[in-house]
Length: 246
Image 1 (tube, rainbow, N blue to C red):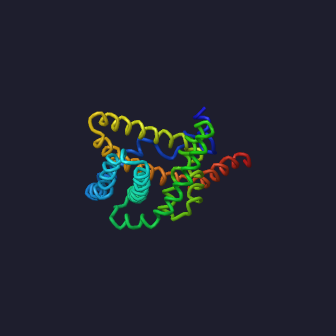
Image 2 (image 1 turned 45 degrees about the vertical axis):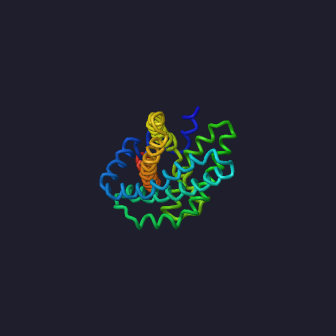
Image 3 (image 1 turned 135 degrees about the vertical axis):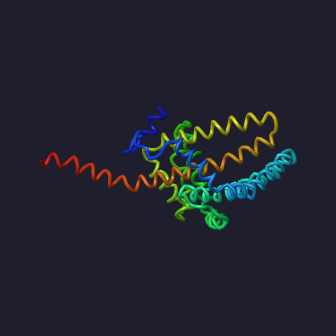
């Protein structure tokens, strides 16, 4: 049933514009080309987050109100970190070098990303209230909203809508990309969890940016495919019509 939902749109999975292995290879090569900047950015962005997680865990038993405050602060940290890594991922996906100026650029759109995230969250919540499956489908379909916000400066509602457009007919492959990351991260995090909770959180936070980089690659591919498909369809129609005239 899930695959039937994902088959919507004009273009089938066989006509996909990207492969999952290709997306992960792109991430590996991009990191390799930007190794020094990558590790520096990881240290600057992820060290405060992991320190915060450690503090949050120690405060968990000190009262509900205080713990709720730490959850809100943690959400804001994740928003800031996400927009920065999305900007870096967009640079990587374009074959360009990323720099610290990109982090400042990304932060200008952080408030738009937050609004887009809230729209995205309530769409998914509504889907899960409709027997779970629609929630999964919409989570996959609209997950590129942040890339439109950061890359093109779109309004949050417009970015969510555009994400739905570029994933039309490609949702199945995007879903399996998401699934591969979820499985690999779960295996890594839960294996280490039994040894050290802190270490498992660090590993999870290190893996997450790589997923954002992979999505950036897919986002660029989907945009490129969307741009050429009308031309391809027109040329196909012309080629089909020529024998009829003959």
